[in-house]
Length: 269
Length: 295
Image 1 (cartoon, one colour):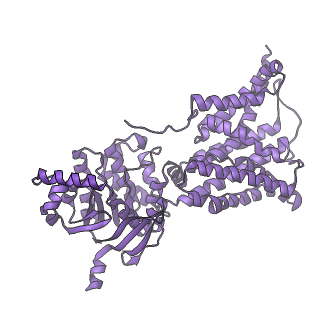
Image 2: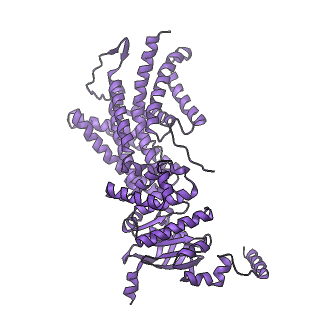
Image 3: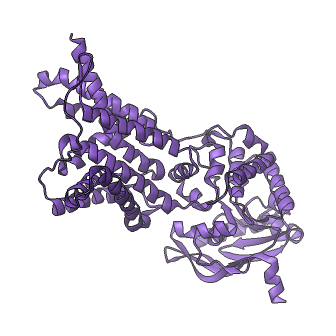
């Protein structure tokens, strides 16, 4: 039974702890499973440990002097806890990092070329590019302008397209909706859903915008203070009263409690 | 005004300038692939020249074989520098890497001094020193050869930066973290840029070694090379070529006017003025990339 569950999960992260600079504990035993072909969301507020979780999976922790001090991560049954970032991309994990970070002085087309895996033939690369331009027609229109001058939405599309060139099996996105107008968020999330459906691409989505994220994912994890505090299907999370109150902006607010809470906070700090 | 004399000054200035470009291309290569100004390029150039001499004189190979072989050795040295020294510093503040390249320059100078001593050795390329006349204008043959090498390297690297590998190097210079995130071999890319710059250093070392002899003074080319690279915009190869020509002409013609007034030595002043004014007035140089700030 356990074996079967493992086989269905493309990614399995078990009780992972991350240390920065050997002292600061950024996540404290996070376990996350991504079933093959599904879209999963990591929700939570600023500094909760969502980005660190993604970096632990993609191997980018090392660049920020962080390391996994406990726990293990397996991808398609292989232990990748110690693997280099480059190796993980080759295996099929691609991480769209926070803040878009396109190669600003390159054209969008060159951005896609830069991400081509070693040994990818010219014809395969061109086919990949055509497919990406098909998903994001706006990029095709501006493919020879300078990427730094694209709009925020276009840059986010380019960052996703650039990740797709690596032919990932698991795509991880860190706050793709950050700073974008609601209609753009809807457009980009719609495209992600389409790619997920068309190609069976598994997606791990980190979002503060829980409302938008829960519309497209099947399950969600709520992370607070470096720990998973809640896990359930998107439906269950949407109807949970705490989630509604703190992350979806709904529910009734008891102002007496709010006041009490903030007063207590002041004492603490 | 003697127009023939003036154009002779200008043309020879431009040729000398292209030799500065030859040196500056090495600086630009590394900057373009890792956003680090390499203060060890002077040391590398000197080592390049010494390696050629070692292969030609001490081992006894003919020059046509010694130069490509030295290029291979230096290519390896460039990779080695990344592997041993730079890799630990990837992602650290640029100023640390800058200090490291300065230390490397001192190290290379010390090493060559220890191995080959301080006396000047000649390159003996076999290029004729007979004057070459273009109309009434006298042109130095070795400068013409060097300028040709500079232009050939310029064309080769312009093409290189359009290839997939070249695009990856430019991507690395733009954003290390984003490069890692899509699986670009950042460390290997930086190593490759150092390796290519070391090969350029061999070319510059051979030409300049022929002109002024092979000794410790070769490493001082860094000052003029850096001025050219900064004026050109640090990350633009075209900029390095054009800035080299500009600096060469301004220096040669300007010195002819100023030297009688100040009693000589104005060349260095002109170079210093160009460097300082560029940084003050146009910090990204003639062709350098602007940092993009969208509003």
